[in-house]
Amino acid sequence: LELPEGMTARYSTLYANAEQGDEGLPVEYTEIIIKDIFTYKDFSQMYDFLKLHCKYLSEGKVDNLIKLQATYFKIPVDSITELWLFKAIIIDSLTEVQKYCVYQLIGLSQDSKLEDEPEYMQMRQWGTALEMILLMVRNFRALPMYKIFIIQQMEDTDEKKKLFYRPSLQGQAKLSILGFFDFVGYYSMAVKEDGILRRLFLLPTGPFKAKHRFESFQGNHIDNPRMTEIVKYKLGVEPIASKKQVPNRSLAKKQ
Image (cartoon, rainbow, N blue to C red; front, side, top):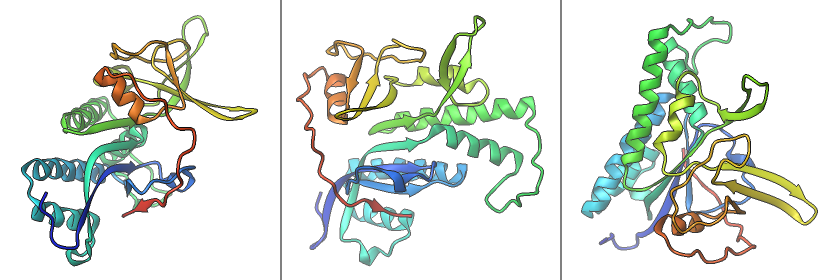
């Protein structure tokens, strides 16, 4: 890209913060740009932004990228000294995004009073909510970038009262959503004597859903996973061992 004099470019990850829990992130990265999501409309506007961003990036239209960044993040064009080139999106979480979709259908918003009684969802509205969330996932999935969807879990029991975990989504979405993704991982954390172990299961070896299509992956889980490992497994390349120490860098947060 031919950038204006004095401007730099940086590959970045956009973090859709619907959970409002970014202050507790244990490791901070300057490569992550956080955008708070408060409504389903906010989430839809994020998709519109990324769709244009990917188009302008593929066409090498620097001026359009700069103006788009200024408009979406509400910052003056003249103050932009670094152009963010988004190659990945993290949606945290799809559970909250679906709730925002439901709130929109029943007329709830940030401006609603706490004593206001919302309307009950009708069967037709549940069908509408399902199609809205599935369409949005399809649209994000079609973007030429990496996508990570985080979904909360719920405890449930089968007919034999056996405990299992399922996606914390409402309606039929909890049954159909997992089929939309290339891989589904179950992420767990355990406190050990020598530190914290984070484990990503890629096969359903417990009371949870998981799947993958990585021909080069052997085993059923990855300990302390990094995106570099997952991408290399996806591409069929043996991953390089991850470093144990991660540099602590400042978090870039933009509203």
